Each structure stands twice: as structure tokens, then as C-alpha cells.
Image (tube, rainbow, N blue to C red):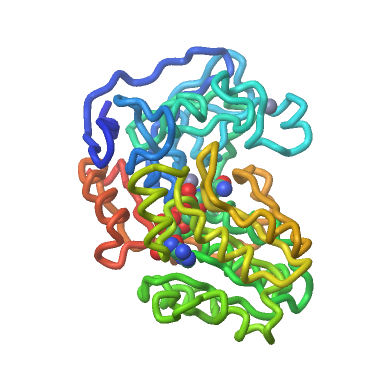
Length: 382
Ligand SMILES: NC(=O)c1ccc[n+]([C@@H]2O[C@H](COP(=O)([O-])OP(=O)(O)OC[C@H]3O[C@@H](n4cnc5c(N)ncnc54)[C@H](O)[C@@H]3O)[C@@H](O)[C@H]2O)c1
Ligand SMILES: [Zn+2]
Ligand SMILES: [Zn+2]
């Protein structure tokens, strides 16, 4: 089969690999029909995620058709059209029993903090991902769901990560009726978080980024007010002024450790790797939320991180909430919202490419070229 293969930072190739085999009775092999490139994949692409091994295949946002099932699989049959949450999890350990699917204790011998994620380095279990023609799906009775007939492929695809994560980000904000919600980052996750905030009762939604084309999408897709941080000397002061000098009730960080906006932090974090990335988006979130407010962190951060304004968070009495999204937990509500027309995640898709062009897709997304917001790799395009 053809698969995307990592050959080192900024080096993505298409190579021939063996079609994965059933390794455990509850495995399924999925023939991938569509996969997306996530902002999280960029951290791998840039070589920032520890233990990203040469030869691995990325891709944790994908849908497909069941190609083969192990002998104990009961919920899926060959030919089923399925969506697969980006988390790999057992469904029965202490954490899974409490809905903490992204923190499953049985799927990742390399770390106790995070569970398993498809195609997301050996730090997240070392599983190959779905930017390939086929992928092995462990615990096939637990993660995947059959895609309802009425649901569009691209909407289903975005439920496996970007939409679920944006929605989860808003959920962790504990938004109350009328709250002002600020979202840092107008990528797929931030856009979906901003849109979801309205569904949870927000009275005002403000999205901050420095890419005008993405802010335009935030206005159109999420009906948000927008601020270009590059046009303001101090975005925190701007945010205070915009919120009666109090700060937003809820701030969602949809940026993560590769944040722009502060040269020193970018240099010491992302470039020289003297700290575990730039804390600037998180610090802006801490500074621009009101005292007693909530910061919800969806942006990805490495295991050990940087100069975070933790004391300020303590002194402001903030609630900090965060996790990798347990994607499937959001599905029942997301299906309702999509069916009712409140959410159409496929509206954020800007590019559709065949697998052979995935290297170009990574480059374009990384460099934010050609108005790129979300790229879908279509396996069956040929
Ligand atoms: N927690 C989870 O389960 C989960 C799931 C998916 C993605 N993520 C993470 O969420 C983050 C966003 O993902 P995405 O797909 O939207 O990525 P993306 O790269 O498309 O979006 C990030 C956006 O942040 C903007 N940005 C950079 N610095 C900023 C700053 N200081 N302030 C405001 N905006 C800034 C960028 O211009 C960009 O538009 C990534 O870190 C990704 O790894 C987490
Ligand atoms: Zn992701
Ligand atoms: Zn588990």
C-alpha cells in the first residue's frame, strides 16, 4: 500500500508499506477513504514531538471502510463505513470507565500521562496513522462508529478530531449564559471552538490570530469578532479594553507550543529549543481572562514546558482546564448539532489533495500558504 512516511523534520515521503495485519483478535483493518492533516501533525512535521521515529506514518484524523476484522470484533463488519476517533483506547480501564478516553492506561507502554494516538510518535504509543491506504485499528469494538447514512464524509472526518476538539475546548470553558469567550488561534480547532461557544450560551465570541484570511473565516464561519494581534502593541491591553477592563470570562488556547507573537519566546522555544516551545499564547490567555475566569487549553504542549505565568494564574484565582480531547465522547451531541444544521465543520475545508501530494499539503499548511485552513487527503481520488 501507499503511505505517508516521516523521514525527518520537514521531510514527508510517499512510500510502499505492507498492508497492516490483524495483530490482536479485536483489531480491524480500515481502508482509509479520507484523512486530514491536523495542526498537531505540524508539531511532528517540525520535529518538535519527542520520539517521532523516522519511518512512521502520521494521521490521526481519518474515516474509511472496514477491510478486515479480527475474530472477536462484534460491532463492525467488512464493508462498514466508519469514522475513527483519534484516540486509541481500551474502553474498560479505570480512566476509560470515567470517560477519559485520551488518558487510557492500556494502550501506551511509553507514557503514563497520555494514552494512544494514531500516527503521533512513540510518545503516544507508536501506532501508525491513517495518512495511508490502510490502517490498523486496535480495540475495534470500542473506538470506531458506523457513519450514519445522512452524514457527509467530510463532516464525519472532522468529527474525529478538529470539531470534537473545538467543541471540547468550549465545553471545558464551562461557559455560562452571556459569557464573553475569547479564542486564541483561528485554525480548525479555534474556529470550531468559537462556533461551539455560541451553542453553549456565549454572549460574545472574540477570535485572535495574525492571519487575516483565517480571521475572515472566523467572522464568516463562527460569527465572531476578530482581532489581529500583530496590529496591536499589546494584545492583552487590547483584550482588557475590549472587555470593560475586566478580561474575558473564558479564554480558549487553540494555538499550542509553536505560537508566534513574541520573538524571544519563539527563538528560545521553537528554534533553539532552550525551552519546550513558546508559552506566549498560554500566557496571553492567562493575562486576558478575568480574575476567577477559566482558561481552557486545547493547544498541544510537549511533556515538559516553559516559562508559563503560573503564579499569575494562581493569584487571579483561575481555573485551568485541559486534555487531549476524548473525541468519541462528543459524538452524540455533535451528530445532533450537525443534523440540525447548527454545525457544518466541512465549511472550514480549503484543500483536497490526493495522497501523492501530501508533502505539498504539509508544506502549504505549515507555511500557511494559499489560504490554507484545513486540508483533506482523498485516498480514493485516483
Ligand atoms: N487537545 C487536543 O485534543 C488537540 C486536538 C487537535 C489539535 N490540538 C492542538 O490545537 C492547536 C491548534 O490546532 P489547529 O489544527 O487549529 O492548528 P493551526 O496551526 O491550523 O492553527 C493555529 C493558529 O494559531 C495561530 N497563532 C499562532 N500564534 C498565535 C498567538 N500567539 N495568538 C493567537 N493565535 C496564534 C496561527 O496563526 C494559526 O492560525 C495545535 O497545537 C494542535 O496540536 C489539540
Ligand atoms: Zn489532531
Ligand atoms: Zn482504557
